Length: 183
Image (cartoon, rainbow, N blue to C red; front, side, top):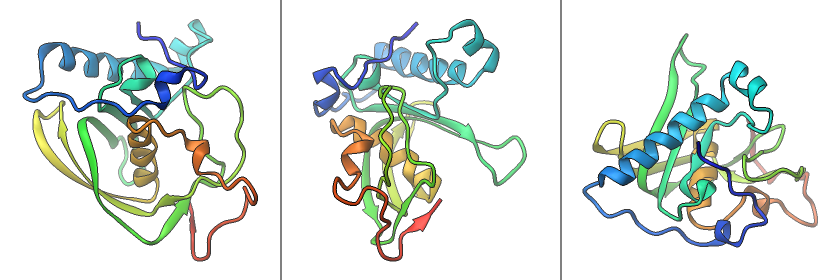
């Protein structure tokens, strides 16, 4: 079972290394294990048996002790019944981002961050990400808006040594930007 690295560890502040392609067996196994951990974290019965496990929607390789540019995301997609947004991304890059900003109403959380960090985390409302999807075993281009964009940016930040609370304005932590969208 993977172990979550907490935000007091210097390794979480390092920029992760590109993953050599084609994807090796070891890297494929790691990203599969990351997705397995994330899905177990969403299982209420599993969390009851493992009270130290918190529910998450995304997980980046640095959070499990590997400074590699890999992340997984999985959560229900509200557009359709039983639809799930799920990715296993390798070497993701944000290639387009909007001027329009957004934030999560209740603030962001993180499996690596135990202490609360209240305040608005300003994110781009729309992004385009290019990556290799290890689930599909092909290059993908993802256009994400709103919540989807927030989750992707949060996980990609981990690959750059950035934590969500780095985006909170220290002087005016609860002040939205002009025209910013609340999600």
